[in-house]
View 1 (spheres, rainbow, N blue to C red):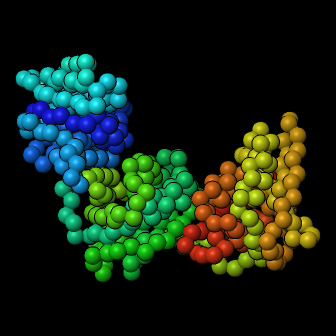
View 2 (cartoon, rainbow, N blue to C red; view 1 turned 135 degrees about the vertical axis):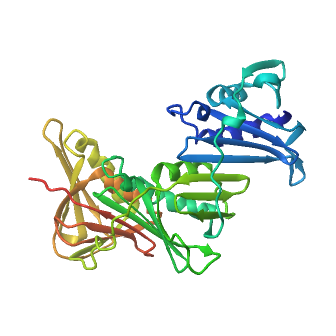
View 3 (cartoon, rainbow, N blue to C red; view 1 turned 90 degrees about the vertical axis):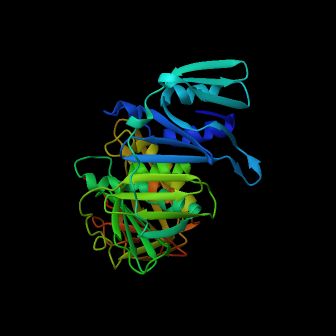
Length: 380
């Protein structure tokens, strides 16, 4: 096997597949990156058996020559060393050549490395995915969907199903829901589907997988094809295949959690509210659970406060754009509120409260595609 490639192109491609490589795997071959060359180009693969990423570099694309393949073949190279080497090579081109017994030479400029490769035949094959169940979504919208939900997944393994995001596709609409049982994030978006009814319309994708996928996707309007099987999901973007296992089990029915009525409603500037909570949390961090209090006041203002006996107190008044309903005193996690406000992508947020000990809901003032639900904290 032998090929010559632009160094920057190789660095980018290696960094993409490295997102699937784990150093803590029990299968030694998976600590490596598989490189295959054929007449069309070069394919790099990384996997940790939960996530697999395949990146293809074509010989030529858009009139630009990316890679020169002199001899077809394949090799597995230790990912940690290979990624560090290509990043630090001095030349603009990299030549990779494999000899007998998987010995591999990497040359660039005045630098030459010789690495011991591994047998590519031992590398697990990527899942075979039948593309019956397929729908498409724009890459930038997919990144937004992930950003607005994945932060709310559980980090505890006591309920593994909650470490994923529930995707439910119905009548051309994708509903993404994440919850850790203390808060919930939901986002709805239209998708383009090839069939009227998907065979697997309700799946749970690990939060970790979606986070890594988001790092690889471009901020573009290019369509990403998504194929769902019984145990796998495949995302197909330009020159990239991203496989992830699905989580087993039934996701809890969260539709009943969102209150349909409210006793107190307020519209407030997202930025001002976020900054006020941020300042209050400076002292709240020293207390238990990072709790801040919100109290309604006269003339449409709310008071944000926090109290840490060892450190001190903070009070701040924020004006609302509009206020309706009962007076309210409620306590909540500053972190949960800030996480929710940061992903709202709107200048004004509508908050509906149903009482001091009931969950409350945040939505953008100008739409209902995103909902954030937070459970209050009991304070004595």
